[in-house]
Image (cartoon, rainbow, N blue to C red; front, side, top):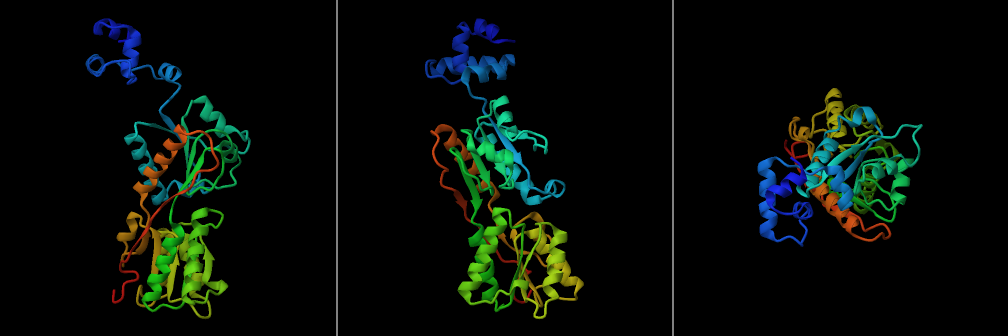
Length: 339
């Protein structure tokens, strides 16, 4: 079944069939419906490469995902959930998704840009890519629409979408302070990543506002994964005046802190309160269940797609205003009094 045969059976020209299948206004609603129904019955599907050439649109968005931790990043439950949210939002907006490979050290700086042009992609969503990525800088400087989730970059058609990381961290510290804790430490993520830096800034801002001392030993860096949370909490618990509460910038690190507390013979939350960030599935499964700052994964995905569509339809401008998605504090057993 091809377009000529569909046109013959429909009793119209091939141009009319093409206009009908592309929702052109020159074709009446009744004719569009009749042609679409016949195409469905006959199993006709448009030739997508040819359709792309005619419409000059591919309805395809590229996704660049490089956490900077290639081996572990594929097992990060929050990032996998975020990827699913982006895919769902694109599907609901009638876009296809193409995952772009991460360039190697020998690839040209324009590797991402070349891939976008080769596949005629309409835009790109960038997911937690390190800001110093050379290929990303070239892409952002071009006229290609780019929406970055937790990625800070600038360009004529770029926008950043992020959770309110600083406010979420502040809420966690305020919660622990309200419980009576005055020695509150933090386990950060890799500080070259914007979410980790912003959560640390929120922690420090809340501590300053509440008059809490933050000795250097109370701030220790992890990598967002469980083992680093165990190691970081052990360092914190070994200082001369150990904290009574830990805010970890990621749930896996928070669970690691709970493991370290158990290894040290401490009870959570009686001896050590713990609050995480993300609200991955495991947060509600550990015992005691983990208090955490929940990110709205679906909201992030929808905001990224909406922002990208706005860039696609707009003329190039300076970097668009960021889209900030609120977080919410979930109080569970790891910080609940009497748990």
